[in-house]
Length: 353
Image (tube, rainbow, N blue to C red; front, side, top):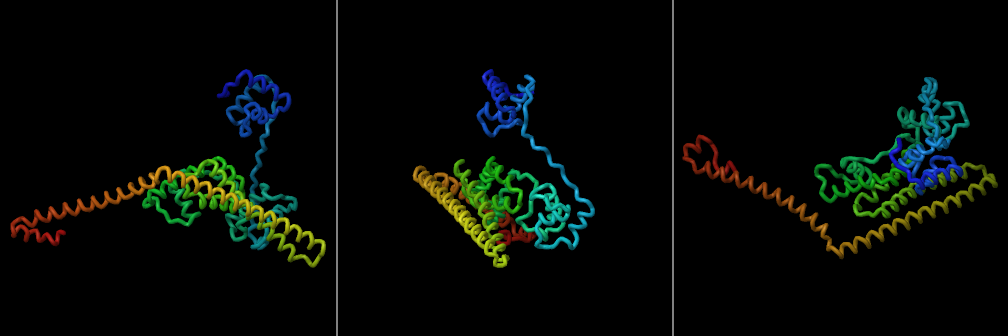
């Protein structure tokens, strides 16, 4: 049962679009003018219900679920044996394990072997080859946000002793990490090292900026995607240089590799310039905004925060002074007792204090 009511105009448009293209996702996105919708959205379910009611056979773009693969005892024995050594490529190990030269990167066989090696022989696989099928989900607790700041930004915060200012920054970081765009991009990376690089650069760059606008947040995400891209380009250059060094003075191959290195180096240069330009624009726009805000309100927020922290310190000092005063008053009372009572107690004011 659909929880979204279609208008008569929308029903007519659905029928018209069905004649052009029977794909459910296409019809939903066209009728509602929203490219993010699909058949699982409330709008998509309403379109689906309308098409079914009118006996219209629509199509979907559902991707068939890939069946998981269980390694056989022989394959596990092969992976744990001397046939697999440090420095071997994980894809090559997979092809040897399944005795199939046509296996492609990130296929289910490749992922299964990578997961096995990561669990039982982590010394074999390079960090840049470690992959994961797990979906990344944003942290929900302050303690996890603090841990990410400590891990990626080199801080040493503690959840109990953290100051008010830094606590608010970590709370804002929780909000930033829930950004749909950030979650989308980080889940595009199946290589763990890429995912860690993307997250670490994001946290390191924005954790102490609790005042970012949505546009600035999106640009910082773009900068971080370029950091991952920069890494991949550099890896291609390294592989090309290795191939060039291994050529036996073959003129044609040397010329081709040299040209590829030149083109890839230019690509790396453009990527680095893009990062520099975006970072410069972000820093400039934020500094100008903060300056304007500071001139307008005289850093009222900073003064209030400083006052709150001073108030807390003063309260602790006052409590300590009150406690000392009570002790002194009790000592005076004991000292005013008869001498023999004092001797019985075996205590003096000086000892009490």
